[in-house]
Image (cartoon, rainbow, N blue to C red):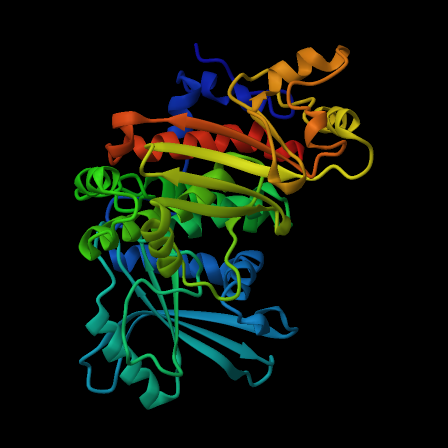
Length: 432
């Protein structure tokens, strides 16, 4: 005879026992707000996302403020979303429309943005966007948000090139960015309403199980050959423009994906630091042409003074994560001891290296953090040199890996790069 449930007594965690099921089996039967199946095409995916955007106040504010639409935080403001909207001639179909209104009795339109989305490996169609720009101008709309698996450095960037966007705003969200931001809000506990928490949790689950949504996991078919040609070329020789473009296009997405993956898998919010409206494509191209390396600066938890760098060297086929620390006051030994106090929770790791830089940028060979901890009871540290001066200007702390052939592997390169970033962030950067 089956055991009966005693209300007010039995634990919810034991519910599976009364149905003679394993706990994970019963959990898999849970009703879902956004079921998969026929909901993975562009239209259904866009509809589910837009409805969630409308439903969760904190989510829509986070995303739209990131586009500079600050009116979303005003009082008496409402968001309305629509899908599959046509122009008057029925020749153009918008995947979505986001409308911002103010006022309750008789709302007025404050802002409108068109939405064009793609899933799988489908790229945003430039000619299609140009037609939407024309349609927008006809009715007084000057903003389009594109959504796809392609990543851009900032939501204010666009993955397409067009000369028809003068005085027109082209924004871009990657699906990975949208799902990572949902989890970041949940983890930071800024979403107070339990129903909104449920919606965002279900949206993240839907994104995670979506077969047509993915982050950046492959540097592309041209990566191996392009990397080898850059590696073999003379340092002073200019890189062929086609090779340069293929590497820049892929790495620009990967450097953004690092920030998103680190945000997703650690307690921190990591962003690419872009200065003075910097064009990352141009910056990466210039770095590669000048010294065959790429350096990206990331900042932590919205603090642009708290940074670390990821450096990729195509000549040595190496990757490196590093940060600079200044210890004010005291002389070299006291400065080093103060640094070790900051890194006390970094763990004993032979891979973490420390370099002391003195006046005139003089330094001796870096030594491991574990060696410095062992030397705390000695009269001097390995990185000290009185001939260079009594005080250390700053410390370089880094982890470096020589990848060899793995550098050319389109998937393994990403695994190594993002893995090293996670190790550095959790063992070094978070303590500084």
